[in-house]
Each structure stands twice: as structure tokens, then as C-alpha cells.
Image (cartoon, rainbow, N blue to C red; front, side, top):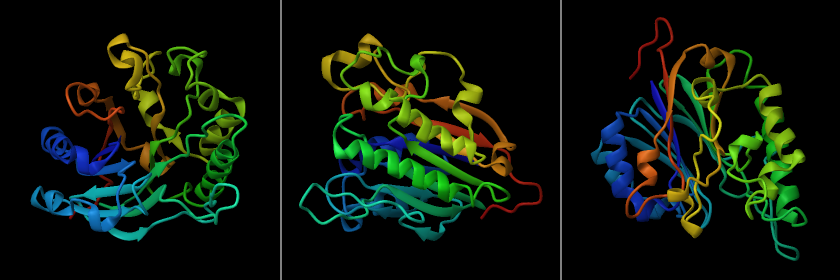
Length: 270
């Protein structure tokens, strides 16, 4: 199975690039983040023409997650247990469209879009920490035996070498000790981050802001990751960050993370 994760930054704006990516890379399952649309606005017909089923969860023109699969799509869940809600002071709190789970080819795949945090003194940062900690608690029940993947945009740079400058304007909420520890709880729950296993080099980024020519200057962050339960991590054999998808007109500000897995012994993929 070839599994990819990509913050597409608006699927309606980038559907042509996404479909071309699927065809070029022969991906079986694509987890998308920041689709920025409701399910009725998602261009599912384009994916169907390419041979993919789609599950998506979006409430409005912000956030939103989706999974496209050509190896089956079942048991869809649009939140994880105890996923926290968020709302501006005075507004009703809602569980945002930031997590979507589905079983694809025998693997439980979660597309995750962690809150940005905005600023260290913003309520959104505490929401970010609550989100990560709740996900880690939920993942403790998933890791032991089942093949499970938690992939997406985590909005945390775990190492100092995962960001071009610790003084960058976007750095504070991504390198804060509390955020790094909250993300590390996913690994303490038993999950293994696979992209770094195969791509351990420093300054290997997955995101480059549109502003100030960050991409041509090489000023990025590594914030998109693929975590796998032990049962799935043992089957991983390769990973790439597809920087080509950050190039050219109409690109997302993120690059896809792609991981290859061997099939489970005796498995029959639909």
C-alpha cells in the first residue's frame, strides 16, 4: 500500500493538481487536510473518475479533512473520542472538522489537522494542546495490535532543525516545549513516526509559507508527519517528501508525505 498525506490548502482550488499527483505517484490512499469545503462542495466526481472513493468532513470554508482510497473505504468516523471543541469567547464551541478516520485496505487511517495555535497567549494555543493530548489518549487504545496510521498536518516542529529559524514569526506556537511534548505523547502511546525513519536529514521541510519567498529561499518547516502503530510500522519500507508539488503555479504551501508499506501476510487488498 502506498499512503500519502497532504495539506492541499483548498481542494476546489487544487483538484487538478491533486488528481495529477495521484496518477503520477500511484498512491492507494490519500489523506487530505485543509480541504476548505463542505461535503456537498467536494469534487468527489473527479476522484471517482480516477478510481477513488472519498470520505470528507468539512463544516464551512475553513479546516476540513478527507480521505480518498482505491483499496476500500469503510467505518468512517468524523472525530476521535473526546476530541475537544473550540469557539471564540462568547461563541458556541463546536468540534471542528480536524479528524477523519476510515479503514482502507485493512489499515485504519486517520487524517489529522492539528490547530495552528496562533499565538502563545491565544486561546487557540491551549486548544491545540488539548487536541493533541486528547488524540494521544485516544491513540493509546489503537496502537497495540491493529495497523493504524495517524497522518497529517501536525503544526508542530519537534526538532530545532525542523524549522529554518527559531526566530521566524511562525515559530513560537510550533516549537514551544508544551506543543512538542503534546506531540511526543503520540509516540509515547506506541506510535512510530515513519518519515523521519527514512528521511532523518536536518532541514527536511514539508511546509513553506507563501510570504517572503519562503520556498525559493529554502525557509520552511517540517510539520507534516506519518505516525504508525507497531503492527503497521513493521511493514513500512520507504518514505518521501514530494517537494515537486510545492513548485509551480497554484501549489499548496505544503508538500505531500508519502509512505510505502508491504502488504500484511495473507492479506487480500480489494
